[in-house]
View 1 (cartoon, rainbow, N blue to C red):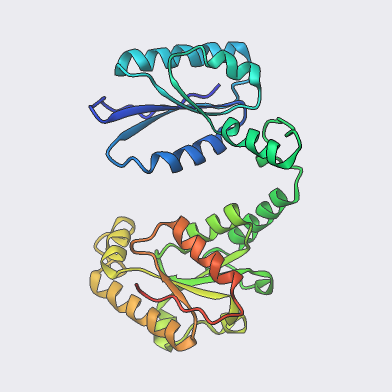
View 2: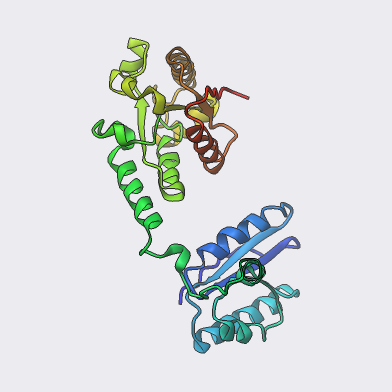
Amino acid sequence: MIENIIDAPLKKNNRTIIFISDGTGITAETLGNGLLSQFRDINFRYVRFPFTDSPEKVEVCLKRIDEVGRQEGVRPLVIMTMMNMQISALLRQADALFLDLFEAFIAPLEQELGQRSTHSVGLSHGQDNREYAKRIAAMNFALAHDDGVSDMDLKNADVILVGVSRSGKTPTSLYLSLQFGLKAANYPLIPEDFDRGHLPDTLMPFSDKLFGLTIAPEQLHRIREERRPNSNYASLSNCRREVAAAESMMRRAGIAWLDMTSRSIEEIAVHLVQAINKKHESVEYGRN
């Protein structure tokens, strides 16, 4: 059993969230964090208990729940995804607020669909389905086409991201592959491109797949300073020059771009997926 807690001094607005699952716990944590994000004035600490599938492991969880309750003086919050009803019943012996996400949604779905669910653990992350294989293939594609390493097989790309160095192309590509199963390549714009004044020639046959990423020069300067401090590469003046040149090149090439400055990778990815799904329409993303 793996337990992970982020230790921090307990304060008035600190609460511990305990994630418990008889599988990986990824679903519980993903959905749970979506709910918790609505409570911005509370600092949440996390304890994780994946693969809780035996009475012995339940005992460890119960002790931890009791310990958290005594330390914080309030009943702990437990977010779980449990398909084993016996294990779930044992856990509920503890004094805590239990939010079972599967219980909340499975029962109404069974009633609406007129069919009982399989109650099997781990199906959403199973390796025997086409969606999983698609994500793995997309991940391999993203790694093989990261940072302009290769221009082979670009005809099979779903999207090709371009932008200045450190504008978020790699993490966005990887997120698109893992979350959506999209084959994403990315190309950094380099000094030679700025000297020529146009996007790399190897990319232009795939202009319908091109999307740009841009970023505020000030933020780019801070990011680059961490990588190469006190260099011309990281200087604010160079960042301003590169961002302006990149946006000008993308504008002339007629490709859409998104500004990473105040958007998360998840938000950028959703915008890109929407744009990809509407690639036969004329869509332009500029600074908002």
